[in-house]
Length: 171
Image (cartoon, rainbow, N blue to C red; front, side, top):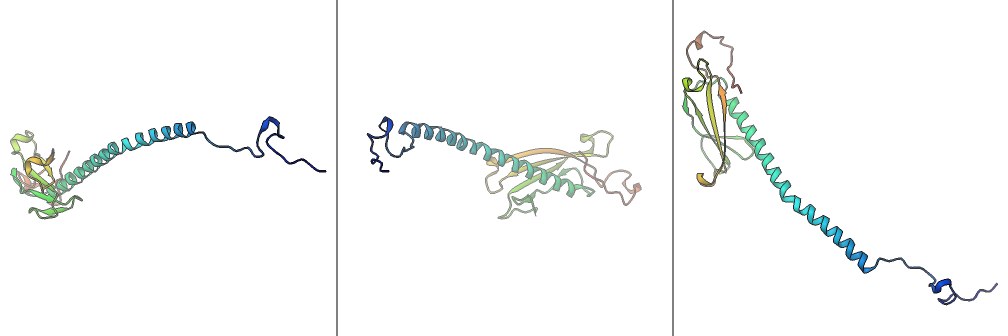
């Protein structure tokens, strides 16, 4: 059997031999518009996420610093007044009482007089002022202030207590 060659005219509806599927320019422009709108919305959320991350890291670091200071004050003999400032690295590791190139946080600890804190209790209030970064002038630093209760290793009747007892900072 011989078939006549296929031509545009010989096919029903005048269609070509192969039907080609493609997107029109209008469809491509609409798709690009939808994708770009979504990308712009996602890119707009990045600064918000970064700020949340920064705040979260700052809160975690403050908790580490406060925990470290509470542990340092637990059961130590000290009197009311202002203690030497403490300096910490950005990773919340204690540097000491002198600032150096690695210092990022400065912690000022002030302990209130026994009568001013809590009447008839052997607890003192230690106020912690954490400021950072140390490398900028004090007026430009961020700061965080909190207070903790301290049971000091001093006071009337201390010698009559159990010698193995270690006082702790209470919330």
